[in-house]
Figure (cartoon, rainbow, N blue to C red):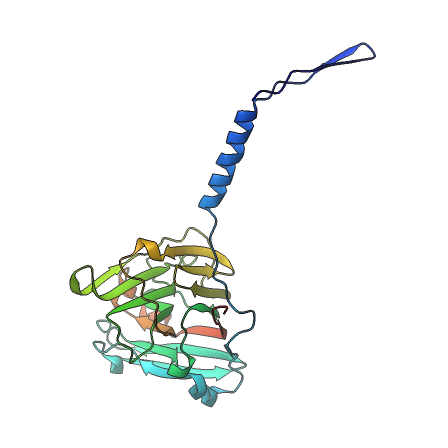
Length: 278
């Protein structure tokens, strides 16, 4: 459709309006909306009031109410590292004090107890993370211990190693278990974050998920989204637990290590979990 060309005459002055092609205008609008949709992220509908909150205001002994403190993975030589976990001034401090075997891969994990498990919804963590060679801080989700599903999901909300700049993190989604016709299978789907924020500063890291999607955000901005339809299994039909930890070595030391930078500490201000809206 073409708009009619008009000429207005007033006081001897002739003013011509340019011709417009309506089809071009409509095409421009459609292309603009399409481009915007490429950068749009969905959201998960959660309750406005948290199901539970941890403000770390009951001292170190109060950690036992919601949290387990466990030294790392079975294959690691945990005795090679000294950790300190305590609460002071309303914040959780996880500190790697020293390590005497750089071939080991020790870690200190703080994770919620079974009764505070999360099945769908949104979890938020306000944290300040260390950044040094060999240090491997992470905030992540895994199935509640003891469930042992055929396919387990893992969500790395905040994961940093010194191969990254300190203003980058790598959000990641893993599948572990029996799927795609294979036993003990493992695939991962990392997303290189293109947004900049210094991990050594305070940020709110969050993950929200339901039966259709998983979204990771930093300070409310989506940095990664995965959709159930794109994967062989969507492993979220059971409860998950939140882990906050500092590991050392292993993948974390891919780009080297420097023991002179120890001690290193992760600080956590608060944790909030919102259930899926009913």
